[in-house]
Length: 359
Image (cartoon, rainbow, N blue to C red; front, side, top):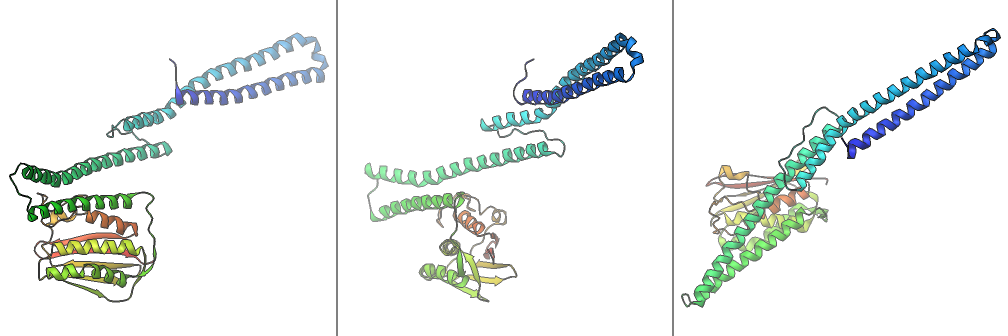
């Protein structure tokens, strides 16, 4: 049977290495035997009459060495084939698994045994397959969600425009305003997707500088103050101590505006939003607490997923693209921090941000 690839190369390498050692050692032994027989004949003249016998004996010894070496060579070939097969089999399995993964079969897994480097390589390949499968599921879900988010406003626009063309509806200012709102939602969705793509890119780099946290938060509040006043929601910032952080001010303002906008959307008139910051030994914890409608317990862990909304019907009463918190999570993690949420239905939601002090 013709062997190919890694198995063949390993077999040939083992045979060549072992044969070279065997050949050199056999030649040395033969030369030593011949040399000592010559020395024996010189040192023992009384045995010169028995020269044919010594020559025959020398040939017998050298012949034994030769045939033993030949037998060892055959054994080396067999063992090399077996050892090469054992070494190459897991690598060939990994190659075949990688080829299947490249063709889209992400359920393939490699059997791993032992605690050596090959086993670690197999485990890494299995982890890669699992990660790719998860990413593929995320990609499909994201594509489906984007299609849904785009389809709904476009379908609304199309049906209304067709109705106007057919004379069923009149192009009243109210309907034109509705069209504009749907177009604005589409624009915001595209902008959010562009931002998310930017933040998730491998070459995304923050422009960090030493900044005062309270000034960053106050600037964010100032940007949205008019919106809070118009809705009748009170927003306050309470800081216990002056805190300096290494951060990208532009991105951090974007983060707080995002979170404050969310709090404003879900907080009814007469409610309030309170921001606090607390310094710890190596970190600072920022909280944004609102008195809004809250989030169901089963939805709290999912709010950072793309396009996730607690309103299963995807009601756009509160607006948004469904990826605002995904962007917020990316920005916090880019700063080396963590973000999480607690919420109680009817009582409000609290967003926690933990940022390192020296990064």
